[in-house]
Length: 72
Image (cartoon, rainbow, N blue to C red; front, top):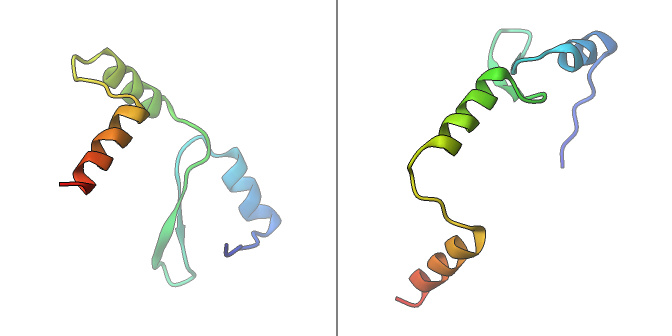
């Protein structure tokens, strides 16, 4: 695994953020995101999915289905 060391100020920004932090290099090129914890939007989306009428499948059911596709 590759590691990137943040300076104290960068680490403070990530740790204190309650939202996703976008990472850019010194030229403004997008590098990625750091998700630190869950936002209210994350919880709202989870509640909406939980309360929906969409079917739900256990991990075992999904794995069984995927294995059945291997033999076809």
